[in-house]
Length: 199
Length: 186
Image (tube, rainbow over all chains, first blue to last red; front, top):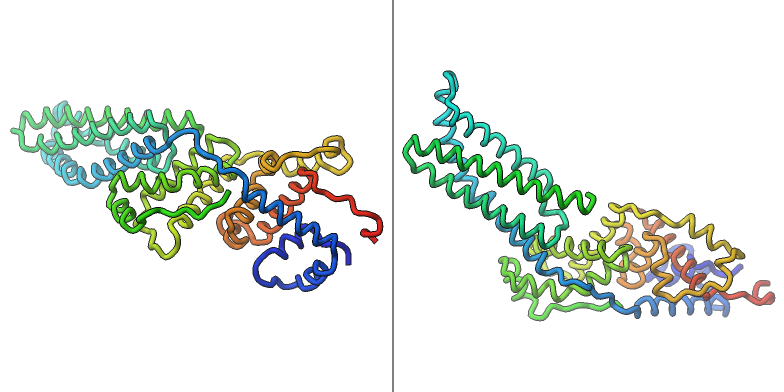
């Protein structure tokens, strides 16, 4: 029998008895040359295990912490804000829908358009899935700030429900427009980062 | 160097981390950041990729801690996430596979082959990405071929052949090839 190949030698190191290795095993037991090769393989693996541990040059915890905080905020906003937003949207619908059959005043059109745009942007951001992407500290901080501001607008939208009809329409239009602006900025931040890292 | 990393007072830390306690999450991160980086750096080509793998790994760890049931070691669980993330990054980046070039470049008798002798660190770095990942995961981290095949979405035979090819190259580059005496060859 010729000498064992490296493939056979690596297979002989595996725990358990692989079928078809009885003959190579017997060869190894009597062949000094293959024993020397097996020993070199063992030594190489031992040296691989003994290679120095490579350490990160940068502390990534601050970035990670910001990402985790942003995600918690986003979740809170997603679930906590849903009720408020739904209510605000319902109010807007109540305000707008009875008048849809007749000419709709500019203010109500603004609210309706802003709500639709806001919904589209939310979907875009969701499909971009920022939680699953690598980010840097600056992006995470800017995104976090924008999310905080969106959460504040959401709270203000809830509060706007308590206002008198005329004031309420004005406030809703202003707040929905504000929300669209912030969502636009948030999408820009994520897209800029995605373009920088190339995916 | 491979270690079995242990988190001191793990049950209490994990309970707090699962509840979102930032200090506890940082404790988990600090316990494993170095071995995760080391694993990622050994598999990925660049420091930047390794750093991204660390970030992705711990983001996943922090989000999924509630899924860790404690029936294995926490390090084992973290390491599997890190290995998967590193292999995903290899696939995503589609590094140029240098297998063919290497075969050509190091054909016995060519200029480069003669007298080439690298140190182990350089030789490992030079291996094609897939081979390096397999040799590291198998020989250093202790994963079986079945586990590696599962993580790479390839066959067990693929993992085995990558391992032996990696060792063939390492042996050559480290200058360990032995010219056998004629009587040994007979």
